[in-house]
Amino acid sequence: MKEIEDKILSVLSSSEGNILEDESAVQILSSSKILSNDILEKQTTAEQTEKSIDLARSDYKRIALHAAAMFFTIGKFFFIGVRKSIIFN
Image (tube, rainbow, N blue to C red; front, side):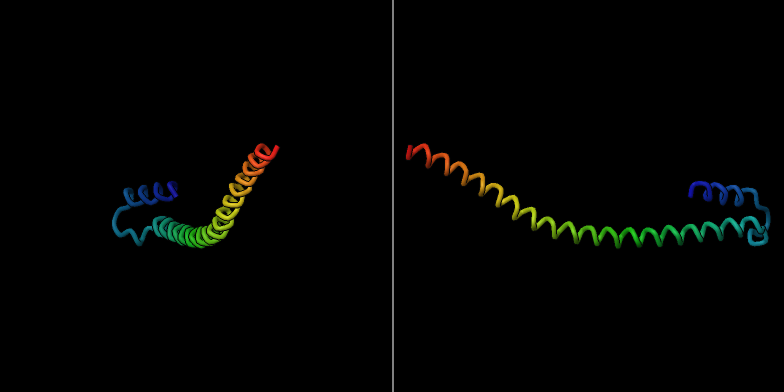
């Protein structure tokens, strides 16, 4: 992208008269338009991918909350069992 910007600036600064008559300027501008469209398409794809990742992440977040609750509950059962064995022994 930087390369195309430099080419455009170079052509614009060196052109004399009507810019539309300069074939290289028109060619550089059309290639920058193609690159711009490619970037826009990839950006749209990236946004869609980001949305699908966020959706999957929200599903795993619910599971993680339940798993954390189970982990700490099981840990509490262990301490209850230890205390119970100390009291009855």
